[in-house]
Length: 464
Image (cartoon, rainbow, N blue to C red):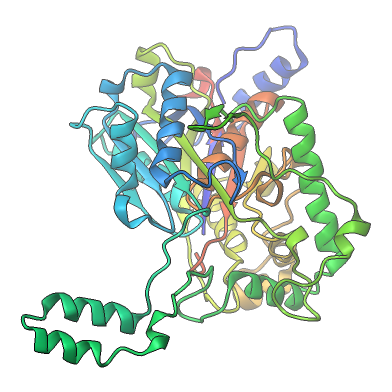
């Protein structure tokens, strides 16, 4: 699990109420700048529309989506390709033909073959890892300009032959005589043809993430109704944000041979009555996690332009946010697989010298309603803090009025490798829109692992 802290750049009319509030903040709030460490800023970020798998992107490959995100970022920022020092993308289920999807997408988007690129994987926080790797490269002085992003195409995932069949085919390829080949073929059995389908499951526990979410919801006494109500909130807020044009990070993508896609297609506000009709998806018949209160399989890509502050200003940019402190944690992948936000949040806030009350915009990944609500209960429990976290007091509950105000993964979608950038851009854009200073981004991830602080950008407090 990782958490990221963000901060905004905004010129405001001196007569506006936000200008007055902002002026107070710049005098009283910390800027989180570190002595002798370069300030790292987000210039801007974009994403393709996030679509339900099996829809408009189903005939593409992951590098097609990643290339579209890179092209959209180049168009949005007008950054010259030659100034980009390094490109990093996150992904989870890799297409074997383009295992380093960052490199293939970069070449496809017209970047020089002299621009290095690599791909990282860290489950649902792969894009977070791409971003923070970029932060490290800039802060250490190795680079000035980084493009970080992520991609996932769940419409076409690798399906393997069984291990026995793979071994047989490899041995056949090495056989030197007809006799050896016939001997190997005689060992073939029909069950060798059974394919191995990928699953969103933990290797160490063999448990699917949905099953873990169901058990977690039960452990924290999160009811089915509570989960459905939260999911409905996510879809309703996402629809409102979409209708009001607040999801400005979305860039149109003309799908080859098809129409141009302009918006996310998984936002579907329903009713509690309709949601209640769905059957449990994982633990049957008594489970509470259903298709209505879970994030759906999603195709999409994201990309973000990250720079050293002095480089961005020298090029005439007005950055959207600082990328400040971040923290990766991990815990038991069986019983606490989805509790990463609870563990990471207090650590990153303490590292930054902030409290929950300082945060103006919370953006947490919504894998399942039960996961979010269980984290809320854990964060609001002194008993959990003392017995499981070794803390004297509870983390504290994020105020719902500041939480995922433009929808979340339940409604916008969750392309595993791309969600981290969406979360950071949502935090940065909300801080600019609402006049806040600090954003907190957090996500759970397979393996039981992040938290990041994003600080709104304003040149008047860039130095400390």
